[in-house]
Amino acid sequence: MNSTVSSSASAFGQKQAHSYAERNVQYWRRNLVVCVFGSFTTLVSLSMLLPFLPLYVRQLGVSSQGAVIQWSGVAFGATFLGTAFTAPLWGRLADRYGRKPMLVRAAIGMAVVMSLIGVAHNVYELVALRLIAGLVGGYASASTVMVGTQAPRERAGWALGILSTGALAGNLVGPLVGGVLPDWIGIRGTFFAGGAMIAVAALLTIVVVKEEFHPASDAKARGSNAAAATAHRTDYAAVAALLVTAMMVLLANMSIEPIITVYIGGLGVGAGHLARVAGVVMACSALGSMLTAARLGALADKFGSWSVIIACLVLTGLVMIPQAFVTHWWQLAALRVLMGMTLAGLLPSIGKLARHLVDERSTGRMLGYLQSAQFSGQVVGPVIGGLIGVHLGLHSVFFVTGGLLIACGGLAQWARSRAQA
Image (tube, rainbow, N blue to C red; front, side, top):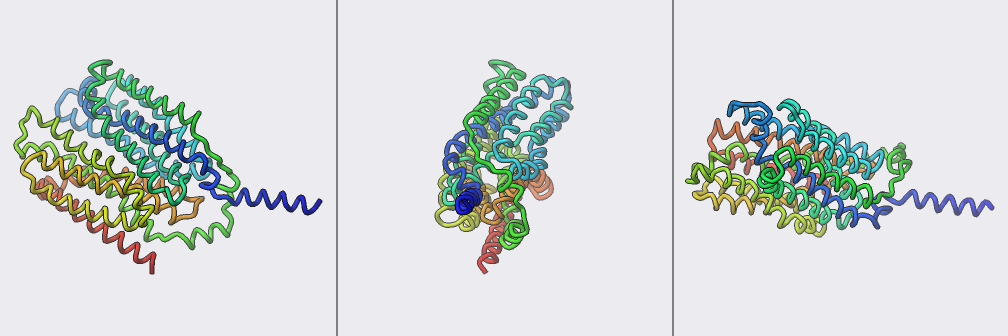
């Protein structure tokens, strides 16, 4: 009798000892497919308003040209600011209550808010709803936490690269959809269509995504041994280097945003084609990243995350510099594609490395902080680019951004050598 009880207890203990990734190994591929689709649709819905946002702001009662531009910028940035604030919170709750509930929460919340944006009465409601979309949403961030913790360690870089490709495709396709859809169903109807797309992603998440989450072992078992193991394993210098690197990913991409139209205008592009050409050039980096994100993530699995991070930072910094010397817009577009190709390896490698730096019970929180740093770069990048362009000249934006990336590569090399010491 005692031996039977002992065997049962032993079997139960072994089951509980299995890691979160081991218990979900049979689900991670199907969950990855849904997360890619959900990230794609939510980012299409968030970015498709770019072409018509000034028109919607004017429709909401803003009349002067300067005020339209100002409110458009505030409304667009509000979502990313909200996501930067709440991503660590959602990551912490994912560690406590599971990854799937965070995906469902984000999808339903964004579907509702996106539809409400279509019935906004004034620009203040528009900004508030865009901010709420960032605060309660973050499907792509929640997907990063799920995929980053469920995929086997030896495939995590590739999986995060595939997820990143889906998100980048959403950012690339969104403005294209936004340039066509309002002519068919109107501006307000476009927001309802975006909400419907996200609702489909929410339904797929509820029905298809599977997760085996044990609250007792995955969240509450934080005894002294676990705390000691976490303290022993966590390299806070490496964590800080990763946070800075995550911020630099979007800072490097977005620093050109405030000067892009003026810079391209100086390359001989006529006023009638300026907006279209600027949009193409801005999209080129996302196109380049789509081509290489999964492959560079696989290289991180093969050669190590630090190697890919350092190489990508230095190469991206070097590719930034020739952009200051172009004489035709297509040269700038080609260099932005190349920059996107080198930049694409950073996020999958960072996510994979973060999983190794902290205890499994804190992985969601760590990935949440990385998402927050990333979106902070999206907010800070245009500000820095604008300030540099005004005070030091347009060409200086490329020199300073390239220098920051190379310096960040040096920081990553220092963090790696410190970890290996």
